[in-house]
Image 1 (cartoon, rainbow, N blue to C red):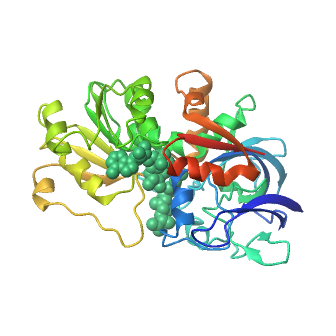
Image 2 (cartoon, helix red, strand yellow):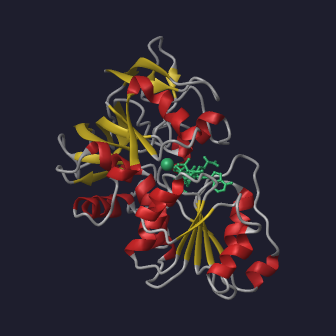
Length: 369
Ligand code: NAD
Ligand code: AHE
Ligand code: ZN
């Protein structure tokens, strides 16, 4: 079939809107009509050329929601008409990783996904002149129609609005899940959040959901303060206004935060996030994605004295199991999403979504098809 997509031809260049060819689903695969997609900073990161796994030409996008149109053989749990959220972290429920119960990082299709291909090693997308286009994160939600492995689709309730719950496909789940599933923050804890964008604000609302006591937000953009306070932040720190961010947070928290989350992808901040946690038990969770070649460092003494450095991908969520529950939390009013979607765009205007992010003017831009 033919469909419309925003194509990334090369690193650093704007996307172009094209009519592209899409082959139908093979065994284990599903054809989905994407109704809406968010633009996450990770799309920006890959488009910039900083992603060592970045491939071009490709169709980016990984924060979508849509409707199943056709189901290949061997996917009995889905049928045409089902509402779904594509999962860049699938859940096969059979691989060593899924069966371990210790991680959400299903590896069933990770190798081909990282090469921009479907599990059989081929692409379903071609440009109008027949050139194969790479898939991205197994999702490519900047296309109006996509083919996705069945294990990479979470079935969600039909009354959930696509233009809001698409954000659960990455940002909401990543932020809220890092608090609930990765860190398992407890009521009364003190939490420091570095970076108050599309991810960090969801860490803040996760911390509020579990009853954290002090929730400290750190951002160089003063415009983030008001929104973060609405989501539960109790203290705002602008690094350009305090001498030493680590000392400042240690003072605010009587010795250090119980938990911190880095939601920017900047290695000096990752160090600060670790070092502002409490001696003996502080845990710092890296969420931000740093550019190719970047490395983190700290004095090993920070770890010897009981702080723990950890990471979280897709909030530690098992997509097919947890994403439908997170959609319910939103529909039941336990989670806020609408306020974070600051801009709605047509596919033709998708480059404006990237520009708004660069200028720090948007939290989430959502493209509706
Ligand atoms: P965003 O652009 O919406 O937000 C980034 C925020 O960081 C902005 O508010 C910006 O002002 C702030 N910031 C930038 N430099 C800063 C600094 N030096 N000090 C303090 N604040 C600073 O981005 P996002 O969509 O929230 O994504 C954040 C990061 O999380 C990105 O690196 C993204 O790739 C990553 N991410 C990771 C996962 C995962 O599963 N681990 C999932 C989604 C996104
Ligand atoms: N390709 C990058 C890695 C990017 C990365 O860490 N991605 C996160 C999700 S970001 C979503 O916005 C993730 O899930 N990582 C686990 C995985 O298996 O990719 C690089 O640096 O190579
Ligand atoms: Zn993302």
